[in-house]
Length: 175
Image (cartoon, rainbow, N blue to C red; front, side, top):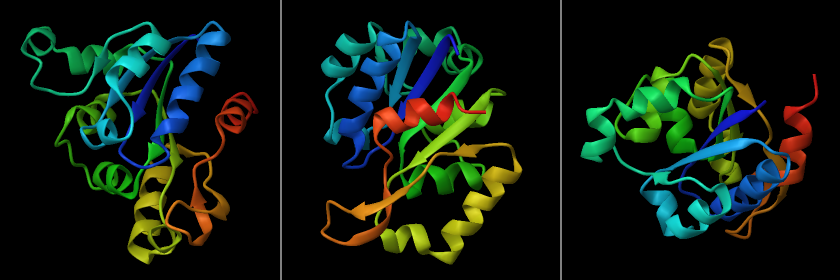
């Protein structure tokens, strides 16, 4: 895995994506990042750009990038696309074929392996409609790493915690 596209969606676990970027860089992996607008509530573009060594993409409205079909280039570039954290929103949007922002558009356009690393409240994770969305994506070839069980930022306990960055790396390289 030489090239990784990391899509960071907007959840409290977005801070873990910064450590994930650092670990990939330490391994010599090229990494480009896309963040949803809600992710920018939790992390800063400067942090992502400094750690990855590349500009952070956040919008389809970047005229210079999109004149060159930048979202298609990003969809074709990586060996794998990782969505971490993967919120209930981005998982459900992709499962239902929506492409309403840059992240979703890339996920709809890529032919590369997509790995979702879920992070959400236990009630959201257990929701029957949401579980159907996961099954749709798995049947389409997407891979899921986690979630894990534990205490959440909201104070509840259960399945829904994003895996630790070190666990993500380890799981990606297991066959």
